[in-house]
Image (cartoon, rainbow, N blue to C red; front, side, top):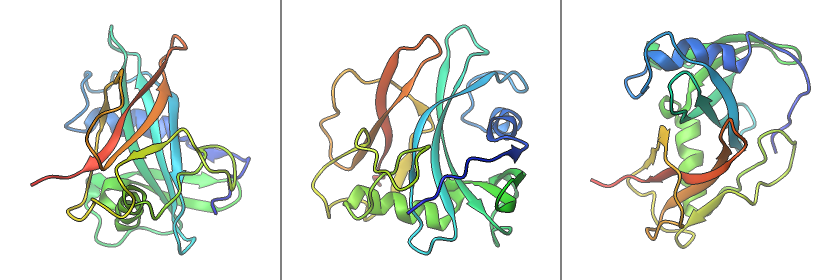
Length: 193
């Protein structure tokens, strides 16, 4: 189970994401204009215990209408071999674990495999900031053991949904807007085609 260390990280995750996020093709603001706040998310466990996995929601308040983004991240003790250059979010010094390479989880096999395991019902979502604590607010629609055969698509720009989507193979979770309003939406779904 993931262990959450109460320590420092320099630079912080938000500082790294503020530089990295505006350079992504799916970013909806102007490059260099991000004003990010942490708004939600969850973790998954790496069965090998070597890679930290976090699905972080950040809200960008730089635009008139705030935008919520989902960034799956992997935390590694060494560089990820074979990863494209744009996959590296940045490098930080962790107060307990030392140097950490932080990657966009969409490019990390450990992250994508565990997300597919979640959709199949073979992984348990963990609380974002508490060690060894399941997060029951994260729900997976569809029967365990189905879906994810063709992969899982991460929804980078989150849209609130009023009702639970009718399709199976979706990961639904929540976040909080800067004004304190809670929202829920589809974080990931079984890829089609």
